[in-house]
Amino acid sequence: MDLAERQALRRVAGLSTELEDVTEVEYRRLRLERVVLVGVWTSGTAADAENSLLELKLLAETAGSEILEGLIQRRQKPDTATYIGSGKAQELADIVAATGADTVVCDGELSPGQLRQLEEVVKVKVIDRTMLILDIFAQHAKSREGKAQVELAQLNYLLPRLRGWGGNLSRQVGGRAAGGVGIGGRGPGETKIELDRRRIRERMAKLRRQIAEMTTARETKRARRLSREVPAVAIAGYTNAGKSSLLNRLTSAGVLVEDALFATLDPTVRRAHTPDGRLFTLADTVGFVRHLPHQLVEAFRSTLEEIGDADLILHVVDGSHPDPESQLAAVREVVSEIEGARDIPEIVVVNKADVADPVVLAQLEAREKPIVVVSARTGAGIDELMALIEREMPRFDQEVRLLVPYQRGDLISRAHKEGEVLGIEHTGDGTILHARVLPSLFAELERTAKPVETV
Image 1: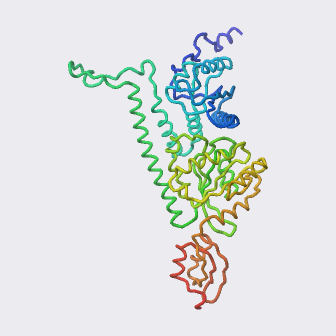
Image 2: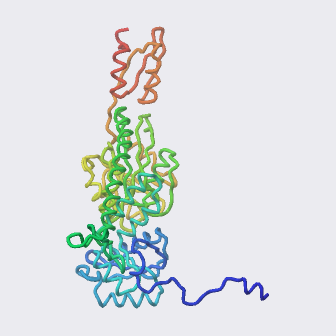
């Protein structure tokens, strides 16, 4: 027993790494655990403010934290110094101390000064909504392009918020002073924080070049689809509205589906067919959220171009959400910033009909046209949605009735793959093809086949 006690691990008092002062740790290292939420209610109703804080709670839980308290303050505008005012900041510090929280999350984008001064009062880490969303994106990015886009957005956000602590403010000796040269050779050099800023700018320039190269590959794939004149349908909508579930239901794509905000970031394109056999592509895009950080919109611009190049947008909205109209407005605000997206026809798809409030569904159906109510989980309304897609999608094809020689069976095969075959009849001279085909195949058929009437 004595030997086991001597060999056992012992705790040495006074060596805990729990820090009283947040400035002793690097600000970029986020560790969201026990969280207190704080929001400033400047406009709208109390229900709107509570819904906004509820969304912040879901964001924080997605990032991997435990919510202890949620606080809202009514103000005309956020305090320029501490976001909630000096008195309320002291009350917040007491709540943080009483609950044992180690992080405060603010429902808004705070300036560097607000972050620093609020941290000095509450003595724990303070992060804002933008940093929280960036942290979630960093967790969920899987592809090379997604990781590069998220890192670019994070560096863009971090650049004006860099701070130097202690020795980080020391200067690097400049000029020839280090070589022992005297008068005229000494220079102040650059501080460590300036050095960090320069390195961040260099890294951002490199990431932009990488994203531009990856954008070329995406544009090549898109150009190939456009050259084949296949109609493109983009699925856009609020995060966690069920876009990936809808894509799986329509195409059996096998995309990750999870009850979490921003579960999928990388766009997925799959082929699908309308009930009458028309081929089109479905693209699942990144989800949106209220006050989506502009850094993310800029970084994910190449991904969002899938929406701008679409022929039809399926705008998916969560029918079980308490305020789906605000979700519609938030998505349209971001989509309006995408070049060419304003003129694209839109179908509002209300998902989760199996758990939605019938009154809310009736209000949406009265205000939005065209609209369809579906449930990606049960499959209700999917047939109606496909019929609506077929009706709203632009038609590039032309109807033909031609006699195709038997040696050009490849044209018959293309008509089955790329068009809609209405009828086939085999004769002694060849195959009579009655179909709807795209212009490229139509030109090839005109050169090779003969009109049926002249035979």
